[in-house]
Image (cartoon, rainbow, N blue to C red; front, side):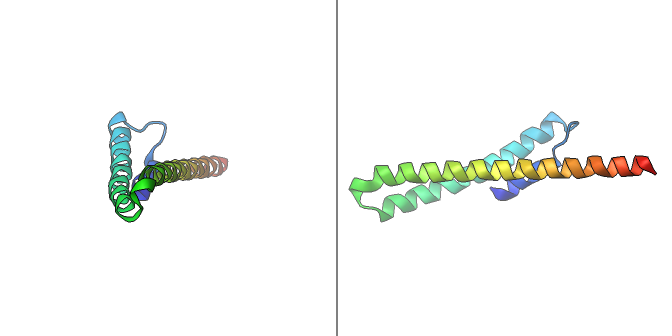
Length: 94
């Protein structure tokens, strides 16, 4: 999941739609693979009366983690683009 989100740093203003879709599919696959095993583990470990609350908590935590990984990838993308812009400005100055 994190690897797929980290690849978002490859995105730029001129990135082709195919690359964008491919990277989103890769990140989405990683997110999807993280949910199912955790849900089965929670169902197996908690008492029957607490399964609904435990799955709701798990869903909340997983959604928060997914959001944070996307934010982290976008912050990295912004930093890379800012550094590239500063590099161009320095190169143009000389």
